[in-house]
Every structure is written in C-alpha cells, then in structure tokens.
Image (tube, rainbow, N blue to C red; front, top):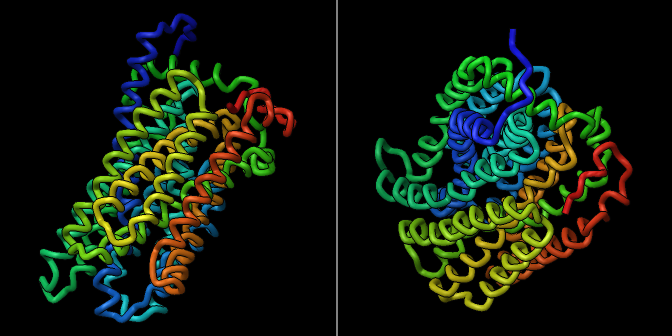
Length: 443
C-alpha cells in the first residue's frame, strides 16, 4: 500500500519531473514533427505537381484548406471521446490512419482527388494536438506544464529545420527513381513512418501516472499527490462549462490570428522563394534560416516568461515583432536575401508568441474539462489553416505576387498582439467571466 507523503522536497520533485519528461516528451515530439511534415509537405510538392499535373495556385489553396476543414470538423469530437477511449489507443488510431492517408497522396492525378485526399488527411489527424495537450495535464501541475507544453511546441518550430532541406533533397535526388516523381517520394517517405510511430507511442506511453510501471511506487505516489494538490478546487467540473467559457473562445481567436501567419508561410514560403530564382534545393536550405532563429527565440522567450511568470507582454511584444517582420518582407519582393532576413524576424516573433500562448490554457482549464476546452482552442486556431492558404492563393492570383498577402498576415499578428494585451490585462478576464477558475490570473 502506497503511503501519502507531504515532505517532497524540491530536488526530489525536479528529478521526478525530469524522469517523466524524458519518458513521454521525446515520443510526443517526434510524432509532432511528422505531423508538421504531413501538413506542410504539400507546399514543396506543389513545386513539381503544378507542372506535372497542371494544378493552379487556386487548386493548391483549396486543397490545403480542405485539410483544415476535415481537421476542424473532427477535432472536438475526437477529444471528447479521448477520456473514454484512452490516449494510447487514440494516438495509435490517429497516427496510423493519417500516415496511410498522407502516403496515399502518391495516387493523386486530378484536383478533385487532391481535395478529397487532403480532406481525409485532416480528418484522420484531427485530435492529435489537443489530445497531447490534454495528456500533458495528466502528468504536470500548472506551475510545470508551461515548460512541458513549450518543449512539445518547439518540435513544431524545429521541424522546418529538418523538413525543408529534406524535402528539397528528396524531390531532387529521388525524382524519377522507380518511375515515381519527386513529389510522390515526398509523400511516401513522410507519410509511412507514422505507422510505426503510432505503434511506438502505444507501447511506450502510459495512460497516466497510475499505470506507469516505469515509475517506482514512491515516485507514483509523489506524482499523484502533487497533481491532486494542484487540481484541488480549481478548473471546471464539467466539459460543458469549459466549452462555454468566454476566455476559451478568446484564446481561440488569438491563436487563430497567430497561426494565420504560421500556416500561410508554411505552405507558400517555398513558392515565394522559388519565384525569386532559387532552385528547389536552395529553397529548402534557405527556408531553414527563419526556422532556426525562430526556435532559438522561442526557447529563450518562453524560458524568461516562465521565470518571471509574466505572459501578457511577452506575447504581445513577440506578436508585434512578427507583424513588423511580415510587413518588412513586402518591401523586398525580388530580393531573396532581404526577404529571408524579414521572414526570420517574422519567425522569431511568431514562434515566441506561440510558445508563450500555450502557457495560458492551463491557467483556466484542468481535469476532464481540459480535453474539451483545449480542443475548442486548437480547433479555432487550426481553422485558420482553412482560410490563410486559400486567401494567400487567391490574392496571389489576383495581384500576381505576395505583397498583399504579407499585409494581411502582418495585420493579423498586430491584432493578436493588441487583443491579448487588452483582454488579459490584470484582472480583466476574471471580471468578465464568473467561473470556478476565474480567480486564476491570466496575465
């Protein structure tokens, strides 16, 4: 029988959470990297597909949006079922199905097939990110979940550093191998690995601390005690309360505006750079520069925000820096060097804002309600993926360039900065919403 301990010291607690993090975060981060690959590889694939299949910018914009329509429709249902089905089975189902669907993109020949396949990739991937965010609440108290969440999201920021040159290499060196085009190899090599990843996640992860055989009895008791103390008297008792909390929807709006720029750049940055005369390989290498600076800035800004406990101005300033970077990029439409410099500034701002943002949901959500609340936030945010690439494609078709799109993306980040700074000023959110969690300061 486990004994209840009340004398957990700081060193013991630090060692405990280090052990937890090294067990679960590497698995989740690797899965998230492949999530990035299978969401955004269409941005590189289009560099060859447009010539070989005759697809226009509008076709690609609609195809990208189809992914996020499927994703948004099934995001909340997936997470509502997650507590019943379990995290391990949910991740197994998501990873295997999205990997197979992504690999099946090799059979696309017509715009209709392209739309349908992208839609189903979105359907099958739905629930992954909010499921992981909910899973982290089962392992970390509020004072530690920000760092764990930031590490998880850093894998998404870090992914382009690996993905961009890999995409360029695959499409250049494997083009024509076994009578397959480079874009077909890209879908195969980035989709199929998700199947063994799903099996790995199922085998290595535990549903929660109680089922973690890799923890000692004492560690399990300590962890459950820390989590129970952290949750006592906090958060919404029912999922419905979290879904109807105005602060949840405000966070959804803010992250919608931030990832508006993230998704748009992920899908159209290769086309933007290739239009300046770069080869596919050069595009892949050049695109790593903004990502590298972005992930470095996000780690530093996120660490400083955790250390000081301040979120409001860390987010607002970072988002505004991203807006300035986007705006400056519009000034150099034919200069690849200056464009990369400006996109690097934009990446620094967006990545830092994104890392700080995800410390906020844990301040108002806990327990089972976190699954629903986080799903609402991520669904609203991800729905920008259905709008941003399509809008950028339409504006490019109308204007013949990316300048107008960069104005829109800059404006979205500026709006996110202002809304966050105003809405989450000291005490404002608490006065706006009366709920069991409203005493928690969001700023």
